Image (tube, rainbow, N blue to C red):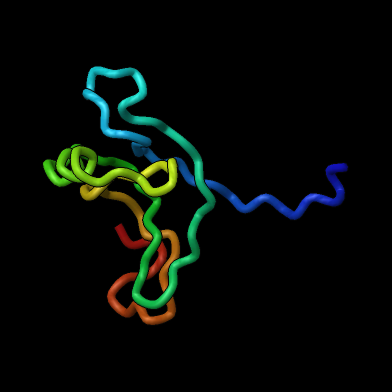
Length: 97
Protein backbone atom coordinates (compact mmCIF):
# COMPACT_ATOMS: atom_id res chain seq x y z
CA UNK A 1 0.00 0.00 0.00
CA UNK A 2 1.72 3.17 -1.18
CA UNK A 3 -0.29 5.40 1.15
CA UNK A 4 1.26 3.81 4.25
CA UNK A 5 4.89 4.26 3.21
CA UNK A 6 6.90 7.08 4.77
CA UNK A 7 7.82 9.83 2.31
CA UNK A 8 11.02 9.05 0.40
CA UNK A 9 13.91 11.37 1.18
CA UNK A 10 15.58 12.77 -1.91
CA UNK A 11 18.68 10.84 -2.79
CA UNK A 12 22.11 11.64 -4.08
CA UNK A 13 24.47 9.66 -6.29
CA UNK A 14 27.79 8.38 -5.02
CA UNK A 15 30.75 6.34 -6.25
CA UNK A 16 32.42 3.80 -4.02
CA UNK A 17 33.60 0.25 -3.66
CA UNK A 18 32.57 -2.88 -1.82
CA UNK A 19 35.94 -4.62 -1.90
CA UNK A 20 39.37 -3.78 -3.21
CA UNK A 21 39.62 -5.21 -6.72
CA UNK A 22 41.91 -4.51 -9.65
CA UNK A 23 40.67 -1.32 -11.31
CA UNK A 24 40.11 -3.28 -14.54
CA UNK A 25 37.38 -5.35 -12.82
CA UNK A 26 33.89 -4.31 -13.90
CA UNK A 27 32.71 -3.93 -10.29
CA UNK A 28 35.86 -2.33 -8.83
CA UNK A 29 33.89 0.93 -8.55
CA UNK A 30 30.11 1.07 -8.15
CA UNK A 31 27.58 3.86 -8.67
CA UNK A 32 24.75 3.92 -6.14
CA UNK A 33 22.22 6.23 -4.53
CA UNK A 34 21.99 7.15 -0.85
CA UNK A 35 19.82 9.51 1.19
CA UNK A 36 21.02 13.12 1.28
CA UNK A 37 22.52 13.82 4.70
CA UNK A 38 21.44 16.94 6.56
CA UNK A 39 24.48 19.05 7.50
CA UNK A 40 25.16 19.34 11.23
CA UNK A 41 27.57 21.58 13.10
CA UNK A 42 30.22 22.88 10.69
CA UNK A 43 29.27 20.51 7.83
CA UNK A 44 28.25 21.67 4.37
CA UNK A 45 26.49 19.67 1.65
CA UNK A 46 27.71 20.35 -1.89
CA UNK A 47 25.92 19.50 -5.13
CA UNK A 48 28.96 18.08 -6.89
CA UNK A 49 29.46 19.15 -10.51
CA UNK A 50 32.96 17.71 -11.12
CA UNK A 51 35.30 15.20 -9.46
CA UNK A 52 38.79 13.89 -10.02
CA UNK A 53 40.60 10.75 -8.98
CA UNK A 54 43.09 11.52 -6.25
CA UNK A 55 46.02 9.43 -4.95
CA UNK A 56 44.23 9.41 -1.58
CA UNK A 57 41.22 7.70 -3.20
CA UNK A 58 43.53 5.02 -4.55
CA UNK A 59 45.18 4.50 -1.15
CA UNK A 60 41.87 4.38 0.72
CA UNK A 61 40.46 1.88 -1.77
CA UNK A 62 43.58 -0.25 -1.46
CA UNK A 63 43.80 -0.25 2.35
CA UNK A 64 40.39 0.35 3.93
CA UNK A 65 37.73 -2.31 3.56
CA UNK A 66 34.12 -1.18 3.99
CA UNK A 67 32.53 -2.36 7.22
CA UNK A 68 30.01 -5.19 7.32
CA UNK A 69 29.79 -5.71 3.57
CA UNK A 70 28.77 -2.09 2.99
CA UNK A 71 29.94 0.32 0.34
CA UNK A 72 32.63 2.91 1.09
CA UNK A 73 32.23 6.26 -0.67
CA UNK A 74 35.25 7.71 -2.44
CA UNK A 75 35.94 11.28 -3.43
CA UNK A 76 38.37 13.72 -1.87
CA UNK A 77 38.51 16.21 -4.78
CA UNK A 78 35.22 17.73 -5.86
CA UNK A 79 33.79 21.03 -7.07
CA UNK A 80 30.20 22.21 -7.02
CA UNK A 81 27.60 24.44 -5.43
CA UNK A 82 26.79 24.61 -1.71
CA UNK A 83 23.27 23.21 -1.20
CA UNK A 84 22.94 23.37 2.57
CA UNK A 85 24.98 24.33 5.63
CA UNK A 86 25.02 23.29 9.27
CA UNK A 87 24.07 25.75 12.00
CA UNK A 88 27.70 26.53 12.93
CA UNK A 89 28.86 27.41 9.39
CA UNK A 90 29.81 31.06 8.89
CA UNK A 91 32.05 31.15 5.78
CA UNK A 92 29.70 29.47 3.28
CA UNK A 93 26.04 29.81 2.32
CA UNK A 94 23.75 27.94 -0.07
CA UNK A 95 24.54 28.98 -3.65
CA UNK A 96 28.28 29.54 -3.06
CA UNK A 97 30.50 27.94 -5.68
